[in-house]
Length: 137
Image 1 (tube, rainbow, N blue to C red):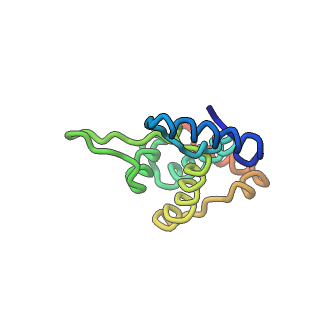
Image 2 (image 1 turned 120 degrees about the vertical axis):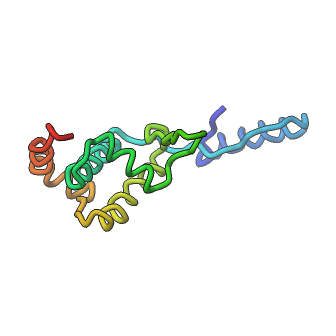
């Protein structure tokens, strides 16, 4: 069951449930429910990865893999590299990845990646720039 602990009655119910489980001596898992990422956050991630791919001169899929590799978002199984899926990231994790791309990768590639606010303000021009190189991605 999920409880919103910012609401007093739900917080009390959560404590009652936890105390009951403790009294039974069972194994429990208590974890924070992370905020689900938004469609706009996901769209912005796609835009900045696309900008990186255009500026770096590679395909979109290759850029995604490079970013995950540089950020160490992968596991090695035998001789295979298994990249983490950004679709599995929650809002907080995705925000961290986006900020890492904007700062670290922008420094590595010597390019400027617009903030989400800048993208919203200049969306038409940025999208036209992306469309111009779409065939190469």
